[in-house]
Length: 363
Image (tube, rainbow, N blue to C red):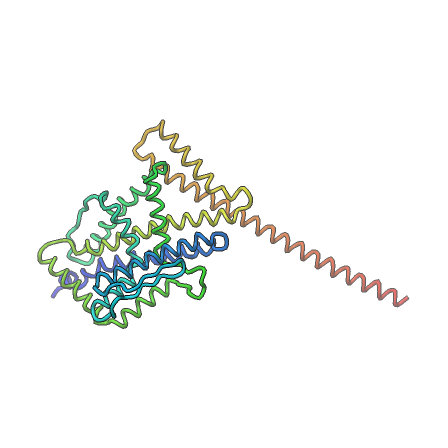
């Protein structure tokens, strides 16, 4: 068997799987970054942080319920609160349904939220070109091509949102909620602190405890690849591209949610009227550009308006935060220098007093 045959029958089926895992890993990193930002605003915005945790717990509970329902185990009890979500199975989990339900429990919270956006945008998703892929490199290129096609369409929708349109504004709020709901933060309860490493540890434990299931999974994807290969149907990459699309939706949602939380953090750290700077810059720049484009017509007026106003807000907020931090450091430095000088003067005064006292005693 030559190298090309090994590439086709052994390496090619793994290419789209590797691509999907890569984007899922980026999604986890983005979720961890958002959690860090939420911790920065916890003291001043506890209600908002609790709400974001509630949204994530809601999606987590929905994932558990779907897992139990689709596997026939059934849902026995369901409870949801700001600090906890509990879904108990109706029947004892055994065999393959138990394994499938556990897959939903592990991966559902990462993919159920973006699936909602995917279904909302499905009527607006155009057809895509699928490349024939029978080697590792062509399969990876095909995966990237499908991701690029869907990603460009999704980003086009995002950057062309009209914030004067209430339905577009509601969609933007939904995107932010999806970003906030990818994973619970548990900021309030330090004992339940949940990190990226905990997600990976749970997945590792699942793989270790179910080695046969992992073997069945890989055998299944190889069989599926061979069937589609001999039928000349280029749909194998499309299956994994779907999960790549969901991860891409999550990454964009997390990015937008992170920008929103970052601006809230900047507003908290700026003094007096400056705390309104992010809102003022965004509103003024957005309205000014919209008014400008009523006279200067272009096909990209909404895209330019959204990108420029968001960029101006982010840059100006970052500069203002940096200047405020520099001023604070300067004030702290001057305060430290003043304290050092005062200590030095006190020390000199004490030494002078001792010297005078000593001279008096000698006289």
